[in-house]
Length: 205
Image (cartoon, rainbow, N blue to C red):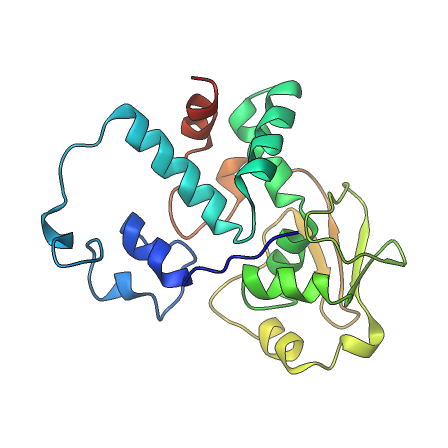
C-alpha cells in the first residue's frame, strides 16, 4: 500500500500538462516547468527522456502506484496475449480504485484510493479495502449502504465535467457498477494523451 505524498500539482508543472484535468491546475495559467529557469527548459528530449516522461505521466495519473507495483503491471501486460500497451491500460483500468473513480462515486483518483482504503466499497457482496484489487468483467462493485449519503459521494455523482465511460455500467440510485468489458486505450477518458507503447519501450530496453 502506498500514497502519493508529493504535492499533486508538481507533476502537472513538471510534465507541462494538466494530468488529471482539474480546473485548479497551475498549468492552466502557465504552461512551463517549475523554477526560475522553467520557461527556458525547452530543449529537444532524448528517446529515453520521452519514454521516461510517458511512464511518469501514466504512473502519476493513477496517483498511488509505486515503481515496483507499476513494473509488475508491465510484466503482466507483456505476458498476456495481444498488444502490451493496450494490456497495460486494461490492467490499470481494472484496479478497484480506478473503477470507483470512473463510476463517479468520488471526485478524484486520490479520493477513490482513500475511499476504498477506508472500507466503503464491496465487490460481489464482500468488503474490499485494497485499491489495487483487480476487478473482473461482470463483478458487482457497490458503495456500502452506510456510506452512500457521504458528502463526497453525493457531490461526485452530480459532477457535470466528466461522464461514466461506456465500458462501465453504473446505477447511481443503487450506487452499483459493473465493468462490462476491458477497455482499450482509445476508450479511456484521459484528460491528456497517454502513450503506453512508450512505457513498454522504456521497460524493454
